[in-house]
Length: 64
Image (cartoon, rainbow, N blue to C red; front, top):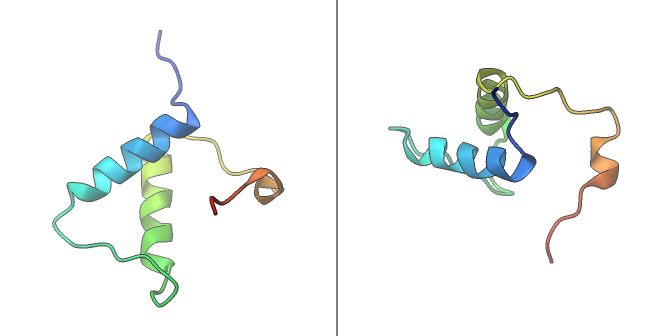
């Protein structure tokens, strides 16, 4: 029986996948987010993760 990834497993897995890529992925306020959004989409589809809920951002907290 295959268990689904937890949210934290997906985050760690995504970051690990990025570090194995040949190209460098830059993220930050001064960078276009289109490239990273495409990578997130690819990772989520490959791992059969559910689409975000319409109100996903209501439960999101950013660290200080």
